[in-house]
Image (cartoon, rainbow, N blue to C red; front, side, top):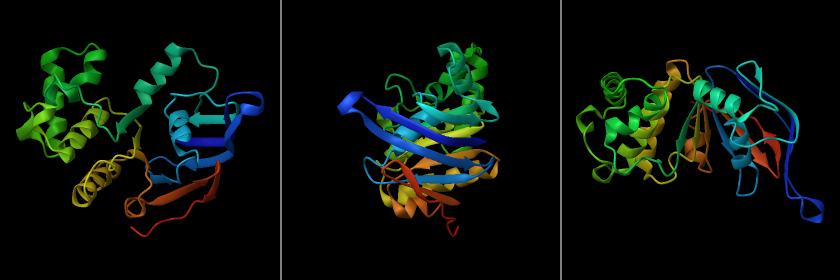
Length: 226
């Protein structure tokens, strides 16, 4: 599903050039549930941005669902992002002026799905993450864990092949974090490929495999006991 071959990424130029990713070789199979770990500055955020087609790489090859992601127009990049990827963030990124249903339905709005149909589908996804009764609540009326569930439902509604989650439990307490990871397990059981960036070892231990970065290189690709 995801294959990186000798991928390099630098920022800046000349003496100020910062070599962030140094020839990464990573393969993530379809249906895997993987965590990417590493301390601050290890390159994990840069890697996630490349996986999410939010940033370009300098050298090497990146294949996503068999398609090489390289030298694409902005239109093509947006097409593959919308078709193949779902994003979940630490800060939830919900629109404060829209209720839970409207937030979940947002990707379908951009796909020109009618309001009635997209809200009906959004309600089904809220039900899937256990939030059907909060469908009309505004984000300010939801707990952190509930907001993240809304964000998960929103990521799933366009039926992506891959879910990319950037520190999805970073703003949550331990119990709520485990509940969110349990939802990820259920989503993974449906066949979705999930990549979670985290610095928390207990969260990483709940995934099938850890990919550990240090100074822009992979230092470990260990299976976890789950």
